[in-house]
Structures are given as C-alpha cells and as structure tokens.
Image (cartoon, rainbow over all chains, first blue to last red; front, top):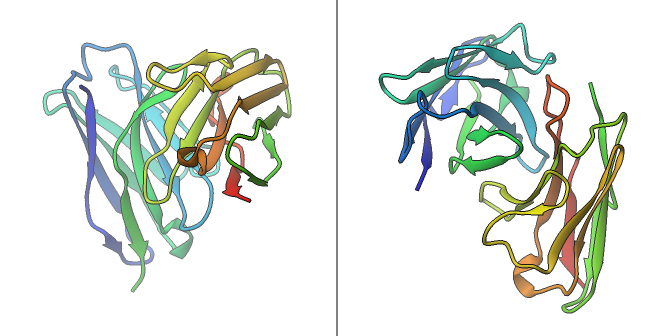
Amino acid sequence: QLQLQESGPGLVKPSETLSLTCTVSGGSISSSSYYWGWIRQPPGKGLEWIGSIYKSGSTDYNPSLKNRVTISVDTSKNQFSLNLSSVTAADTAVYYCARHAVASHYWGQGTLVTVSS
Amino acid sequence: DIQLTQSPSFLSASIGDRVTITCRASQGISSYLAWYQQKPGRAPKVLIYAASTLQSGVPSRFSGSGSGTEFTLTISSLQPEDFATYYCQQLNSFPPYTFGQGTKLEIK
C-alpha cells in the first residue's frame, strides 16, 4: 500500500523559505509513471495546487506561485521536496503531498505550516 | 487558467436524499475531471476520476457524469458518513490543475 508522509518545520518566519519533504513508502518514485505533487489548504479554505514533478525531474508550477516555488526529487531516498521562498502569512496552510495521474489517488496526511514571527 | 465553479457552495440535505453537485469549467476539459470528498482534519479522498469512473472501494451510490465544461456528482441516497465537503479538480490543462471552491454538504 502506497503511503506518503510530509515532514518539515511547522513554523516559518515571514520572508524566509518554507521547506517540506514528502517521503514515499510502499512504492518507488523512480519506477512509476506518475506525477508527484504538492497541494495546500489555508485554514477554513479550499484546495490550491502548488506544483508537480515527474521522476525525470521535469516540473510544473502554479503560475501564481511560480517565482517562489521549487520542487525537487531525490529518487535515491524516494522523496520529493517543496521549497517556497519569501513566505508571508498568506502562505499559512496545511500542505499535502500527493501522487497523481488522472486524479490524486494517494495523499499524505498533511502538515500545518504557520508563517509567523 | 481554467476556472472551475461548483454549485451550490452549501447544501443542506437529509439522510436518504438524492443530491447533485455541479462543476462548470471555464473552457473544455474533455473528461479530465475528478471529484474528492474531504472530512474535517483529513486529506481529500478521490471518489470519481475521468469524470465518471468510480474509484475502487467507493460506494456505488456515488456517480459522476459530464464532459467538456459541465460535470455532476450525484449521491443517490445520502448516508450519515457522506456529510463532508466535496471538490472537483481538472487535470486537463496545466499548470495549474485547478480545484473548484468546494461544496459543503450538511445535515438538514
């Protein structure tokens, strides 16, 4: 059974970089033909797709965040990561990692990241 | 960007009711649409993908239809565990893979 688990700091200061890692177990990022993505959900609000990466390292980002987002993959560790720079309070959200193709069938449990000094 | 508009945003219904949620896309997305159910404090769970394919393990009271710009999610007979928030997502045109704003289904 595929499982995804987000990890990283729960508190980030304004103007700093938010960094999260998603560890995949029960399956290999490098042997599958899926995209691996990040989605976030501000408290009490809807879902926002941040971006995705393929095993080759090719990426797609939400244009609204493109200048601040970097997603990378480490197939040797079966992990992929999110960096979001210059954060503000508006970036406070639950961040999910997910595997997707025609839908996001597998999700991590989510991790709350709060931006505050 | 493709915009997805769900209606209604809030829905109050009773156990046993048949309910329908609509998702309209600002441009055609073929059948590249998924529906998710989210309960408080939990990650979304896929119910339907490719507009009408029921995800394995999802009860058959859930069904999806549509193509192009208009899609529907129908729950044929509401059960207590169905009260949640529902989202549609388009996976046709990227970036971004847009979500609808959500429909909160509450008990009447």
